Image (tube, rainbow, N blue to C red; front, side, top):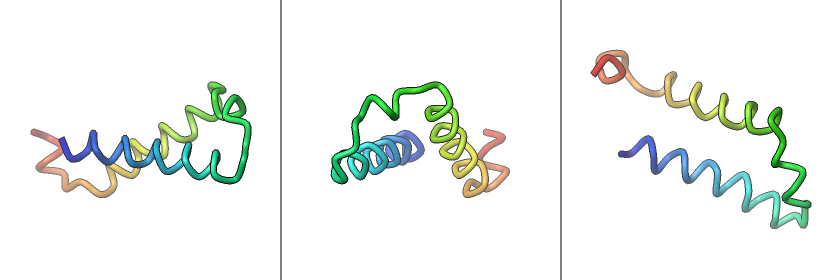
Length: 56
């Protein structure tokens, strides 16, 4: 559950910060951008979570 909240916070921070700087949101909606953002999220979760918890 905490991981889902973390993913939502990351997406909110990226999209919110981009809109705050008046960036066009359509620029972020590209497969390469989603791969970069999504991959960094998953990698962050894997690095920060202890192995026994990941195995469960």
